[in-house]
Length: 227
Length: 227
DNA sequence: AGCGTTGTGTAACATTATCACAGACAAGAT
DNA sequence: ATCTTGTCTGTGATAATGTTACACAACGCT
Image (cartoon, rainbow over all chains, first blue to last red; front, side):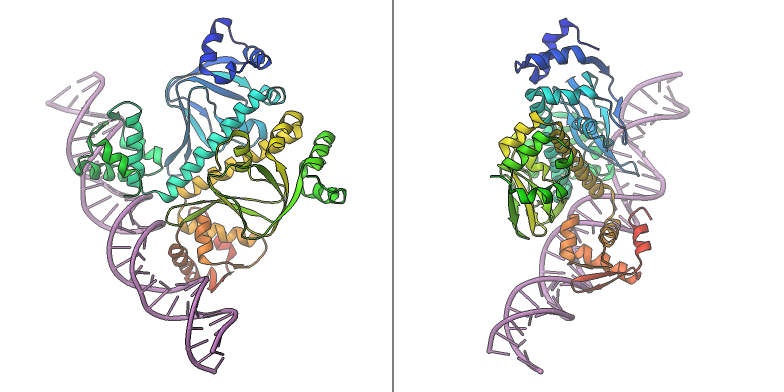
């Protein structure tokens, strides 16, 4: 239930609030947190669970999503380096059950903090409070953005946006399936396939099994918004 | 910039955390908060605004909603007695701009707290922290519920649910327009009209200009969920 | 090559969204 | 009372999206 000294340097590179010179918080953190590894695909939190600990991601990402009866999904947001699942946090602090699912997108290393200390640090450290409230605000606006997309944006624009964002993360070819994109955006595989095919006919992309090659990134960027 | 003594009794009836015997917080609150009245229909917070104060509602309700380019709307949640707009709070605490609109549903009386003290009380009072985090958690799950509804539920079921909820708030006849319901649920007036007409043909409701009479509440309750 | 698994294509149909109106009703003005 | 104006509702046509039910293609494995 504490973090070995040889890891301190590394953690402070991943977790910003450890660099804010709040010695008390750092001491508390290093003594009461622990490390954990989670494997890709592993479930983190089930809907309806109450949460007994808060995980701060060191590397890798997790995906938080809603699951409908029919198996349909939609991603609410992702948790990346230095972040933590604020739903977990808010469940801890308010004892409302967790209203979604979370899984590991990739292998994850995380610092684990027992829920009762999450609470007590709030009284001790303004750095910690800022961290927690920063997360809250970020998540709220993430999720509101999801609402906005779902309600106001057409599916072709959303898919164009998805492709464009993936592209700007590096690869000019995306390795994924139509089903994954559908689950990301909260639609069905058929719809994604249809729209990708349209894009292909317009020579914006090239679709093969399991990959999407981006050809005309400029036009895709344009397509994100109202045409 | 303080609250007259003759109002203390009344405020403590509206705001739960004033009854938690946190004397320090109560003192701070009564000395630093102030009262305000807002009129029905008055805008409270515009999208993109940064917020300089937190309002805690004493009576009345406010509606927080998203607005699309085409004028379409969807309600995210309502703020009622003893509550406050957590978006405001999270904007205050994180300096992210407000990502939606808020207006008064009704006339509202509210206690106004300047943003800098919102922050400082967090350090002082665990009662205040619990209050704020309770709000955060409630709003997060409100909004996630909206996502769930929009993505997974059919419109007729959502409208049935809306009608049923209104009914359980008292009236057997709802005074509202189709447009208001559409803005509530994030769809268009025509869709609402059509579905209401279906319900009327099934003798569940009776529609006249400006009002909807609920006839068969039982069946409406059933219709909320998967048929 | 044969097999099962996973990913994709497609057609038909249901639901929802959007557009373009027409008509119906209420309340005030003449 | 009649007219006028603004708000509210109805409807039909068309586009977009969701759903269902398959067929087929690509890949890994034996």
